[in-house]
Structure formats: structure tokens, C-alpha cells
Image (cartoon, rainbow, N blue to C red; front, side):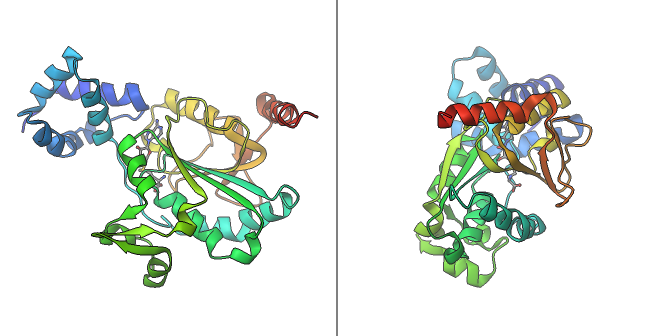
Amino acid sequence: MQISDSSSRILAGLLEARTGQQLTMSRRWRIEPALSSLLRERGITSLDELITILVMGKEPSLSQQVVEALLNNETYFFRDRAPFDLLSRYALPELARRRAEARRIRIWSAGCSTGQEIYSLAMLFAEDPEAWRGWTIDLLGTDVSTHCIDRARAGTYSQFEVQRGLGINQMIKWFEESGDGWRAVETLRKPVRFQVHNLLEPPPHPGGFDIVLCRNVMLYLSPEKRAVAFERLASAMAEDGWLMLGAGETVIGQTTKLGSDIKARGLYRLTGDGSMIEKRSVERRAASGT
Ligand SMILES: C[S@@+](CC[C@H](N)C(=O)[O-])C[C@H]1O[C@@H](n2cnc3c(N)ncnc32)[C@H](O)[C@@H]1O
């Protein structure tokens, strides 16, 4: 299947307008394989025919499907491992101490794809039930892709997916066979909620999250959209909260609102720039009526 330059520009423009994700020239080869099964399902014979339908604007659901098919949804359980060790060794014990009175922890996985990242966190809590007895653990996964969020909510994974990142013991302990696949057990699903959300929009609970994970999402955002996304992430964090990014991502040179946590390489904190922390205290006092 051939794609003309103008058609690939239109598709890349649609993706960027909806999600901020850029399909640079060197990544445009992805368009054809990404869209081939959607075209087959819809009985559309070429990418240029697809563009004609999109430009006529008669099928809004088709443009959403095209955007979702072009997104990179790569993920797996305990991806890169070390960040999860850092969370369980440093951030969670620290939160257990800091939040001992309220006994509530809120974590947001922004750009959660099909849910493996937030279920990995649910496993960290579930592996230590004594430590977290009596605590309210709220785990939120969001993604711009409706298809990903539907899959994440179902919590069901193929044999291949469930084995990626999990040892056999973890797999048997936290997943049960369901049809052709494996479904996360109730203990994992209970603390986790999923929601369709675009990172470029205001966050779900401003100032409310103790940890925000946004891993492997920023890489292909345009610089302007990345600045917006950092603003949104910073505004979601509690004043003493942390942000965690993917292995190849950093806040350095991208935003003044966030800086490295000197005690834990790989975690970022609010710097207080732009009165962010003061604003957060005012919001918290207003919410608690003090
Ligand atoms: C490569 S996956 C990373 C998944 C997971 N965070 C991980 O590291 O394994 C990137 C995810 O970000 C989502 N995404 C891309 N742009 C987004 C946006 N503007 N708002 C929310 N999610 C977005 C994609 O749909 C995709 O599921």
C-alpha cells in the first residue's frame, strides 16, 4: 500500500492535533502497518481513500480510531524494573511515614496504555498487605486511547502479555485464567480506576497525587506540547509529591516547575517556582475548610 506525502502529512497532523504526539519523517513508515487492520475492518482500500473520508468529516469515530491506531502503546509489567525498586525501597516507605495520619495514598499513571504499569503498582501494595492494612490506596490509570482504557479496565491479558515482566509465581498469584487469557485478581483490580484523559487537559485531581508516573509518553511530544504536559503534571502533584518519567526522559531544560529529588535519582519534585507550592497549600486549606 502506497501513501503520498500529503496523506502522511495529514495523518501526522491529525495525531499531533489530538494528542501532541509527533510522527517525524523518520517515523512515518509506521503509518501503513499501524492502519492496515483498521482499513481492512472498514473495507477501505487505500490510505488515500481513508484521507478522503476523513477530510469529508462524516465519520468522527473513524478519525478517533485512526489516532488510536497511530499511538505507540508499548508497555509491560514492571517495565525497566529499577523504577519500581526505587518506589518500593524509597517513595512508598517515605509516604507511609508522611501520610501516617491520613492513611491515604493517591497515585496517577498518566499515559497508562493497557494498564500494566498501574497494576504493577497495585502488586507492590498487595505484596505487603500488613504494611498497608487500614490504608486507602487510590490508583488511577489514564490514557487518551479509549481502546487502551477499555482493555485496562477489563484487566485481561494474553499469555504473551502476562509473561512480559512477570515471573511465573507472580503471574499465578495475581492473575487467573479467563477464556484465552489471564485476568488480574480482585485484590489488584479493587484499588485501581481507569479514565480516558488527555494529558494536555487539566488533571483529574489538581494537587492531589502523591506520585505521578508519566513514563514513555513525553518522548515524541512537540516541545510546545511537552511544556503544556509538564505544567499539567506539576499541577496534579501534592506539594511534597513526586513525578517519575521514563528512562530516556527528563525535566531538565523542559520546565522550571520541577527539579530532581536529590535523595532519589529518577524522582522529580515541585521546585516552588511560580508559587506552585503556595497555590497547592491554599487549595488544600480550602478543600479542608481550614
Ligand atoms: C509507550 S506507551 C507507555 C505506557 C506506560 N506508561 C509505560 O511506560 O509502559 C505511551 C502511552 O501514552 C499515551 N498517550 C500519548 N499521548 C497522550 C496524551 N496526550 N494524553 C494521554 N495519553 C497519551 C498513548 O496512548 C500510549 O498508551
